[in-house]
Amino acid sequence: MDIESFVLDVVDIVDETADARSISFAQPADAAEKFDYKPGQFLTVAIPSDQTGIAARCYSLSSSPHDGGPLTVTVKRTAEGYASNWLCDNLKTGDTLRVLPPSGIFSPASLDRELLLFAGGSGVTPIMSIVRTALDEGTGRIVVFYANRDERSVIFADELARLSAENPERLQVIHWLESVQGLPTAEQMRAFAGQHLAADAFVCGPAPFMKMVTGVLKELEFPRDRRHQEKFVSLGGNPFGDVEELQRAEEEIAAAESDDDGAAADVFSDLAAGPVKLEVELDGDTFAYDDWDPKQTMLDFLEGKGVKAPYSCREGECSACAIRLIEGDVKMTHNDVLDDEDLEDGIRLGCQAHPTTDTVKVSYS
Image (cartoon, rainbow, N blue to C red):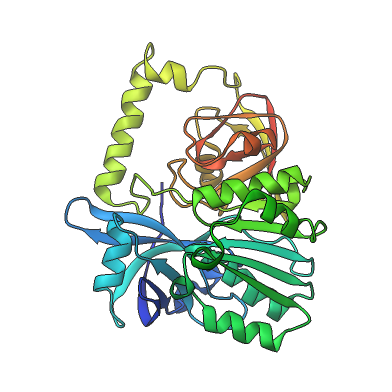
């Protein structure tokens, strides 16, 4: 299991607000293709920790992949957040950090469609990447609804104002300040979103905000393929492949496989009986195999075949490896990120997927 990470130079740090800063990394010259990314994706960053050695966290990219600039994530300090506080208090230009290549599926399928973007607080980070990229590369109209506590909390306030002034026919930004208007209600969201029923909607922010907005979009009958919600989960494991972590994982696998009457029986029950046919659509290519061992996860199997399938945490705690079922079915051993609607829509996590049918066809969305 080869988990490839990269050490990147910090080339710039910009304080966006009193408790949020943008951190820019130099593109790695020897791995530029691995850091090609889509607007709305994230980086997984290794934060030094005295207790665990590494604290792995996912931070959305706020930069545009098409402007030739550095990779930039925007981090907001949270009261109990070790990693965000460390980044805000300790990181300096000239330092280095280990990261995994960009991942995630919170990205528009087309930059030419109308985009309806909902952001709450620091949830504006991937939204900003989408705005910047769509203005540069797309043709569609963009409407941003951005909710914050007060005017001082607005990240990217100046740039959003500048972009709106420079693109009056394409970009409209609506600021909602709790200090002035109170919390937005479902009725107010319904009236607003109802004016943009043909748009592709993207929602990112605090959980209550996302739940309310997503509920409104469902009521307005936005189809599932035009309704996108970012999910943030703090990673519990270490996806950077350090020796201690790999040894622990190997020991757990060995213990499970040796316990025929215990956990292994539960994990591998109901799986397909023998070698499984697998067909995968990834980045415009199709890969087909007929020897998938059901006890292997889809991600492990594809990596064994040399396929560069996307992933980040390998723990079922993020959506970087998300796949969509086209035919057949799989069983996931762990899932902390997909909800019931995602599952009903055929979305699964490749890093946790074991086949339950003799044939499986999937697409990496």
